[in-house]
Length: 166
Image 1 (cartoon, rainbow, N blue to C red):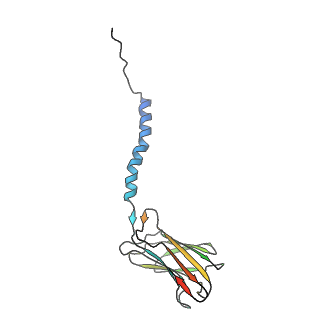
Image 2 (cartoon, helix red, strand yellow):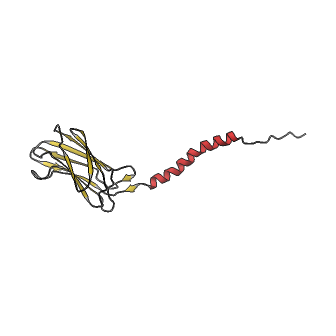
Image 3 (tube, rainbow, N blue to C red):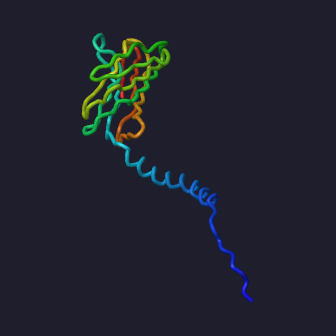
């Protein structure tokens, strides 16, 4: 005597459930290589502190693009100060950027256009180096950019008579 064999069939509901679970995994696997391929290396850009020149040029920072790739619009420089109630008004030269006043002792500078490869943009404050203060700055590249070998932090320190910058 032979026993009847039951046929296994897939219902439409089972098929749709399986596809629904598989789709996110497939999308994730496809999205990961595309995201890593879109990273741009701007190279060794440099943020540097500058004491300026007494009575001529205020203290601040310079941001220089690496030798082969521009710094992209959207790059930010966060400046924070201590030792004074207000770090002054920052001006921009050598490029275009917005300066947002976050508080009396902090400014957020955002590049509004690329800084060409090898070029420098400056951010200067109205503070005098005859005032004791400390300014620190950190540059951050937009999402999708890295700066291999870059110098992204700088400072300026004034002690009423002497000024030092890195």
